[in-house]
Image (cartoon, rainbow, N blue to C red):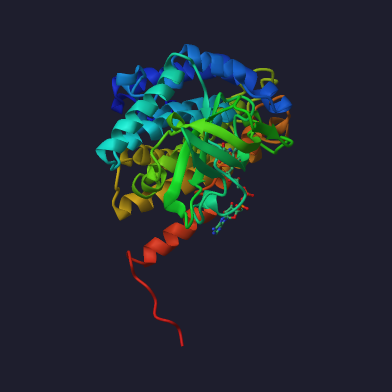
Length: 411
Ligand SMILES: Cc1cc2nc3c(=O)[nH]c(=O)nc-3n(C[C@H](O)[C@H](O)[C@H](O)COP(=O)(O)OP(=O)(O)OC[C@H]3O[C@@H](n4cnc5c(N)ncnc54)[C@H](O)[C@@H]3O)c2cc1C
């Protein structure tokens, strides 16, 4: 089954890149997934394959030597990778977003001519790093406070100095810690009265003096992301480290909200994988299992039908979301986006859970992938800024209030 449902509706590039991701996923990533999960190790081998296939440059614009994929193309490829290895897809998303945000998202935003020229020069360096150098970028934003939910300025500070900035702070859950060549760090320009508008998105070289990775990494799921704590202690970076001009992240978050919806395709893939496994299991086609068929029982048929319905509901919103992405979406598009993101994250966990219940006890053995899908799927609705809770918060508020509406004080 194609991750996008009907491949005939896709562009030639979408068909080609999803097929490439499917081949890599099936032949390389899936066979390695159990080991990386067990040992909580970063899949350097998968990244070498992504590099060779040109997929590190998927969202680098064509004029900079990349594949120039748009939002819809990227999320389909990401979902297909997630189908075979969730942790690889999730960390790959951190890398790709660094190029997407500096690429077509920045292109859609307002900048002064001077900012645009400066951005063009800076991003050319980073795109070259990816396209020619095969370098990997990550996106450690979370700090454990209110900033990653969009409710406070970043606690990580960038002090302007001659030639660049000096950065200090701490990022938790830094996927690709110890694996990325550059950490795409969100920080606040250190100046009196700085607010969220004074955000800065900087590519900090992993080997810069003052950068260190600390802490344990032994989580429930997504173990191959290796998301340890990143410490930045008075790290100097030059002006060319700016992946976006000062303040532009704030504009991007407000005007291009689909930028945060790139976290859910991984979980679309996991949802598909849970369904794929269940069908193969009930048909007695899972390698290494005794060929005991369970498909003839009406209870199993009903269970798998319910799974398929949930999967198709998830896919429908996923595809609509993929095609809705644009600058300044109207309110209904933004609401659909929250609903889609919420649905994918929650349904992935629900489908993995249903899969275990439907297949039965033997299916959750560590020798099979289902229990990993179950654990990985649980992580989706915890990802900031749009956890399942925060999607509900936003939706509820926006269903009932128009912009600027306030309630009178209650007596
Ligand atoms: C496998 C994995 C990989 C990750 N990789 C990255 C990464 O590469 N980069 C990165 O930046 N982060 C990453 N994260 C972090 C993730 O995005 C969250 O920041 C993290 O899970 C938050 O955990 P917390 O316990 O500190 O959340 P808290 O901030 O303590 O929030 C707990 C819950 O409270 C709710 N909440 C939070 N703020 C508010 C609010 N203002 N109003 C109402 N409710 C609120 C949310 O639902 C949230 O789930 C990763 C997380 C996981 C699990």
